[in-house]
Image (cartoon, rainbow, N blue to C red; front, side, top):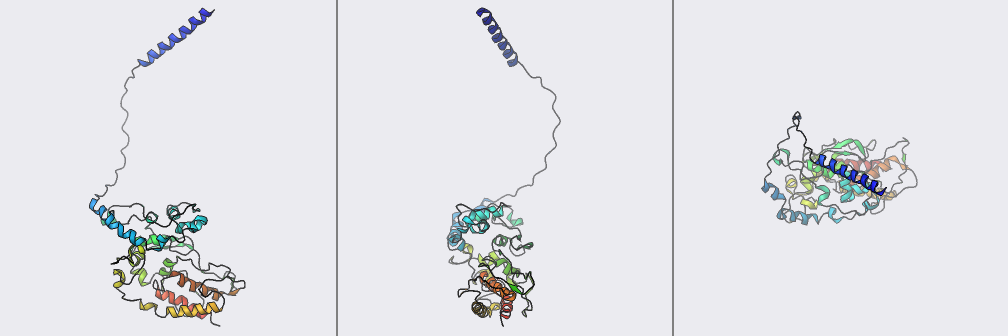
Length: 348
């Protein structure tokens, strides 16, 4: 019986070798060639990038002064970067990681370990190396028009006519909230918000001349939207990033100076158009303080009782001009109209 099983096993093994041998000696027979596939679409010829042109910016001698000036900026200080750690809505402008998420279309989230605004926050890669025809985009993450997604999705700000690179600034330097609206039409308003202002980044809308409170029956007319001289003939980058002999303004300090080339063409001192604004601001501050709407430092005070709607609008306009931080220079006629009409509104 054992011998019979042994014979059966030997037959199986031998058969395996037979099949292995047959398979290993098999030679495929070549068939006819198939039809050629469809040709692909021709690509666009690239530009012949000049290495010297790249080196002119991508070299230590060019970048070191930028790093030095950036160290003097508020962006580099990173004083408010902590807001990105616990407030998703703040992260997009208060941290490097949050801004990258925002500009690349990702959902706003809390950043566990946020870092301050840095080079890679605003700069990524060039869209084109044909600077002669396409212009130098400085590898900015955004040069496209910006929709005011926090306050008015139907309004877009576009600085392309003066400097498309300034659009990158608008991405963050836009308000977070709008002027109050008398929804009940009863002429009263409960000011219960300690942050009753457009936020600290309302520079783009001030320059545009929009989103201040339009107080009914105000006697000072508002200028046409987008008509300010700094809106039509200058730009964020031209005024805030000009050249400086000693590096203490312009470039990546983002500090403007009347000695910057673009400013010096029109100004040698503070623009005369803002004359009278400081006095009006002081008068309005004193009145709002008297009414208990702000403290001595100008900080907004929460109210427990309803106040006249016009008074709330006056407060909004005061904070709009104050938080713009340009002392009216961004849009002098608009700033003066906001404050003059606000002064009228708080008079008994």
